[in-house]
Image (cartoon, rainbow, N blue to C red):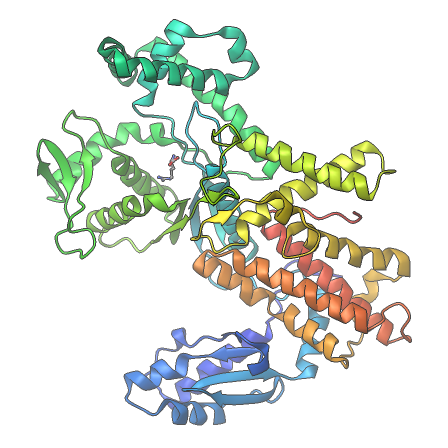
Length: 582
Ligand code: ARG
């Protein structure tokens, strides 16, 4: 039986706690909160590693290796570790003993939290992601924000934090002037019913082109915008319709991607707060006039010295930064979060640096950690920005359709006799999973090349490979008539080196999840899962499960069972579904 509230204390936590105790004994004045252990970068050197002693020694002008030796002599880890070594310039490397490994596997079998612990200090975190703009199709540029943000939210939730996912849609701004002119003069009702976003996009492009040659159209757009801003009922009604039509399309995509938001508070929501906010900034001496506009200056900031943040334009309109400051204030007052995470592309780096710096001036005592989690672009196989063959931006819905179609071809080739509905469902899970994984696997700050063949390959570091590894383990249980329910009481035997390597890797799952939310890097988890599947393959090729003698058979079955659960849980955190059969 699994106990949903159980929080099995993991070996890495026990090691960390004992190390902190030993440090405190040796150096009573030390701040042990920074004494942490991490997964050893190379398993050759051990299971866990700490580099904390080096900085402790440096601050005290002590010899780091000697200090590490003295602290390690105070450790009481004989039950857990077969060896603790001082290495390099003063690292401590911890090697888990086999009985500790076996014990951890056994507890995991009966626990709900698999090789991780729910946070002892749960945080409230607002995650601002996806945030497309109204009246425009969601395109391939929105996929990274949506998928990264969703994965970060899922990981935080799994570790026991409380997450508010907020879709900060672009539903306000000068584009509505042009859209209103287009809507009033050129709307094609039929086209709007068939594909509202395409029709709105057409209207926008049409008017935008006209404004370039005809100043009177620009003037008309300006007038419609002012009317909207002043609350003209007709313009408000059309504007609301444009938002709700767009939201239908956004929701269809989020449904396909399995992404959900706790709230969708777009830019317009903060509109009433902009004027009082700017007045407050002026009154507090934080913003001042500059060439007719109002700006926050950062004289004492090395990077932002030359980049003041504009909060009111010379024509009285407000800026993107103003809305983001209002948004911050609202989030602070509503949720009092420990952290706010913004997921956008790298081109918004300066914007967020300015917003964060202005916010610190405005709320000097606010403790919330603010992070801009930025990412690079998606490129075509020619190394240029990813476009359709005719050179247009790729619509997200078309991209997802193509992913499913291509996956369907593969599935049909492999299993032509499966009923079509089943093949389509498998293709959906594989196709969407492949796109997501391809997006999460690269370092988020680098550009990556979008390649259908690579992401759908059954071999290599791909979602289909991991989904297939999962399904293969499930098939062992179908074939073997093994009682999975009773695996919790199995005695774990670890003898073959492949068994030990697999077990050691399973135990790292929790630390990897922690690392994912510390740096907002899901690629750590992708690589972890890929390696897990590799270690499983090595184990399965060398250690027969079903054909082994009683005792060994159950112990190995437990390894299979735990591997499948970690694969499923890990993929779930990445937002990727699994199938029992493929
Ligand atoms: N709508 C913006 C865009 O498409 C992204 C908004 C990001 N979030 C924020 N709080 N500024 O670029």
